[in-house]
Each structure stands twice: as C-alpha cells, then as structure tokens.
Length: 217
Image (cartoon, rainbow, N blue to C red):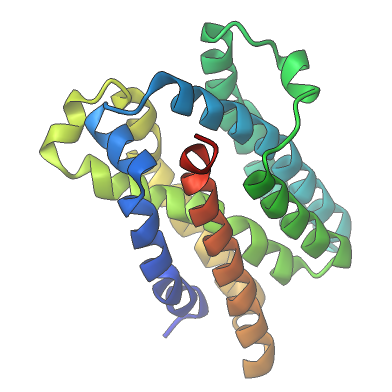
C-alpha cells in the first residue's frame, strides 16, 4: 500500500469525527449561528497567515527546483485562493485585513500554529508535509462528505462548502499526495511511523479547530 494511502486511512476515523462536530453539521444544514461562523472565519484567517509561513520554511529547506516549485504552487493557492475567500467574508463582517493581523489566536488555534511552526523549524521537508497536509486533505474529505448529502445544497453556506467539495480541489489533493509519496516512500519503517504520528497529531488539531467555536460559547 502506498505510504500516503496508509497514512490517510489511519486518520480517517479522526476526520469522520470532524464531520460529526456540531459546527460542520450546522454548516451543512445552514443552521450555524452567525457569530460562530464569524469566529471561525476570523480564526481561520489568522491560521492561514502562519500556515503560509510554514510553506515558506519548506521552500527554504528544499534543495531541488522541483520541490521549491511544488511548495510555491501550494503557497500560491493558500494566499491567492483560500485567503481571498476568507477576506471576502471578513469584508462582509466589516473587518479589515489589517485588523485581523492584530487579533490573537484562540487556544485551539494557537496550539495548532505552534505545532506546525515547531515542525517547520526543524527543516525536515517530509515532516513539514505531514504537519500541513491534514488541513488540505481533511477539508476535501469533510466537505465532499457533507456535499454528497442532498439537503446540503440548500444550506446558506453552500458556496463555501462547494469550494472544498469541488472536483478540481480533489484532484489537487491527489497531486499533493502523489508528490508526498515520492518524497517519503523510500524512508525506513521507523521514519514513516514518525511521519504518520505527525499526520495524526495534525488531524487531531484539525478536530480541535472544528470544535473551537463551541468551546468558546
């Protein structure tokens, strides 16, 4: 079995727990309270700033042009697509980009940020991939799961859901997995087990992020 397929399969139970959270279920039904959606958008905007920094670190520690180009392509997606979507929502909330820069992460968000930056500082490119990919890959899993349910199309958040349930996003995730397989597949069993543990830890931090809005109520 391919390294990434095995790694993902071991984290799928965590991702299924993400699907079951009140936040995702209410996002699906359209019943999510405005203030909780706003809190999520603010915190996710803060998170993405640091997430982008991790990809910058990955480029710095990369030694081949192909690797640099790969990380740059994802960084471009994060800054030009994901951040732009969130900025459009923040504008609706009357919040500017500069104001977000001054806001503090909530504890669940800070723990996730600290984890990624700590991995990035060590400079191991495979470990960095394990720290960042659960965010991208779990979003595809979660949003394709809820989008497949007929009633979800009636949610007021359908446009947001559709962005991550999109077939192109799914294909991008497959590309990122293929790249990671090539980078990590030849590592020893011990090294792969360490990578798997990082991936699962990041997945658990994703779960905490989805729970965050209800922890703060």
